[in-house]
Length: 99
Ligand code: HEC
Image (cartoon, rainbow, N blue to C red; front, top):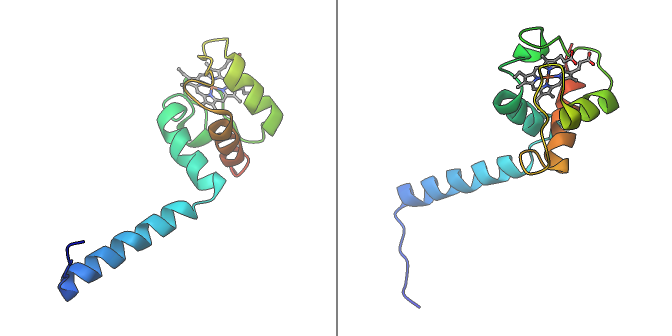
């Protein structure tokens, strides 16, 4: 096995990188949900407010989950190929933080 020698700068960069991985791993469902929401939902429900779609503040979790899977009334349905059950759970968790 070849020896790997790192300068102290390289070692610092590597440490910083490893710390970002640790942070990514400890993101909460709400944080992951917020990122997914930005991609899939925000264009029509800007920050959970009314836009093309209605505001989502105060909509119960089960109602959000059901609407995302079924769509209708101008909203596309999101199937598991686009948004896995885990991802949907995270999006729903995020919507429950909207105030
Ligand atoms: C292309 C625009 C569009 C996108 C993208 C979209 N929606 Fe909607 N959404 C709508 C429209 C329009 C309605 C109203 C549908 C109706 O009247 O039945 C709606 C309705 C809803 C409702 C029902 C609200 C209530 O009061 O019951 C929920 C919940 C919802 N959307 C969540 C989401 C979530 C979560 C996402 C992302 C995964 C999303 N939407 C993506 C347009 C969109």
